[in-house]
Length: 471
Image 1 (cartoon, rainbow, N blue to C red):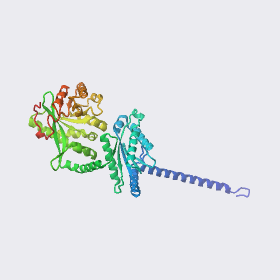
Image 2 (image 1 turned 90 degrees about the horizontal axis):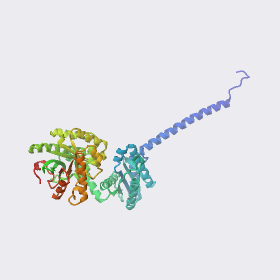
Image 3 (image 1 turned 120 degrees about the vertical axis):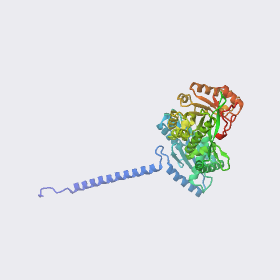
Image 4 (image 1 turned 180 degrees about the horizontal axis):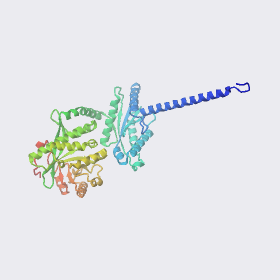
């Protein structure tokens, strides 16, 4: 370097070094912020329901355990609210999942607006929510449950045309217990919620009556698998009588659970447990096989190949893919012609089960198995369903038959049902016939067949009389 040439500028080198260091620090800060964001998102996703932003199962379980520990330490009461949305599945299937999601977010917003900031609000999944409230007594908890029910019922999403839904709410109170397991506390609230749903009451408090019922259900749940495997479920048959010829034309198969002492447990006691425990498919398949075999034996004994047998399908069965195949297989294995088998469903069951139910019914009819719409007039019965030609038989609910001989409005309902059935070429069966007056009335009004205690009680097939004159 010549004496006239300038040397390196130390200030410029320092500036460049500082700029390089600054860029490196910016990159590190950016990477750190991204790592923190990812960690925060991961933490949030592990404890937050992505649809509603409420607490998820994990956070609900943790907070409930903490609340129970604090309650034991400071002698405080805790209320647990378990919410299930009535008819949500129907709305979801009718208006689409986007509309269903909008409704769920609306419920979440309504809960946030109703509850305190210190309360834990969470979504368990589907249309089930849970709320944990500390420092509250029973009267205030019940009043709060009523406000929650009102808030949910006031939600009218635009995507459903303003149609909302109600909430069935179960309330469980800690009541100073220090030995209550969180899972048992949740089961109490869940049991109360189911009781509210069945009663149509909106809100139900878990009390001593439900405690006894809960213990009985637990025992049933434990015993039912053995009842299935040990062949303790038996099928009885109630005759269906033609109102023109007055002869037996078939049967409705009704299941009973034979107890060790020989007594019989009625289906309204154990079928709900079978549905809740997921065993209803096994029960239904067993009944279908036995009913088909029983009818074939009866046909041969009485030389009556025209007789039919009807089995009942629950919403949980209809909602199972392959249900139609299993019923068809039961008929084939028994040697029963498909058109001698009828599957009875309620319209509520179809609407609850959705598209899978429709597919199963279509598959049944495609092989010749007939379908009956049971309890007609008590659910969401519509002319459109009859127009769809999805049914071969309408069964008039016993609530309309009970006073048909005395009440003009019940007679008018049955008259209208028979007229609709005639238009769509559907047979009408009146259920629950117990008196001659009822029989005369439904015959006069044009019903095609009937069943009830007036003719015979349900009994094992080998105890049922042949196709004799009942009148």
